[in-house]
Amino acid sequence: MLREPTSVDSRASLPIGRYLTLGDLCSCTSTYQRFAQEIQPFPLAPESLDALEQLAAAILDPILGHFGRERFQLTYGFCSHDLRRHLERRNPETGKPFGRICPEVDQHMARELGARSGKPVCAHGGAAVDFRIRDLSSRDLVSWMLERALPFDSLYYYGPDRPVHVSHGPSHRRAVWAFNESNTPTTRGIEDWVRRARELKPR
Ligand SMILES: [Zn+2]
Image (cartoon, rainbow, N blue to C red; front, side, top):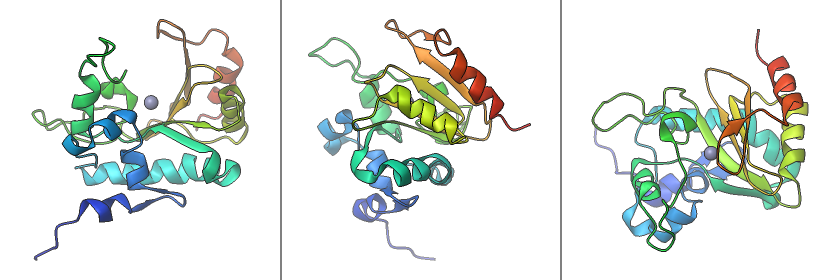
């Protein structure tokens, strides 16, 4: 069967959940915006789209429905193979990589397969986003997500003024980590969140 090739524009406008598009999730990083001409930002694996849709339905739609699209600031969504290569490159201005990423565990590549291995890049499956809510401390945002019992897989907290990382996936770990200055994960200081998250775990 002959099919029209899908244009970049029509992929970008594909709805993911009730409020976002695939374009929102794939082109929000400053690194993508800087190198847009060199980056194919969309998923190759159809399963990645499923994972993003499930993330939206379970996590993002309730958040956007409550806080509103205007206040929702997405800083990192889906990471394509091309975007990964650019994030891992060293920024000549800072001497550091453009992005601090860990595709094997962070779920931002959703269910993409390794080009050589043919196996999932990230063993956890699912999908992840980083975002903040304007005029809301990320500490209050995490508390709200726990109160609402959103079925996240993992949640990384970097500080009250930093975006939070939230994933959704089949493992349903309800894992909460805080990251300190040296980027080491810890549960110190967030014991109450860890306990509440554990209570949300499916039995
Ligand atoms: Zn993240």
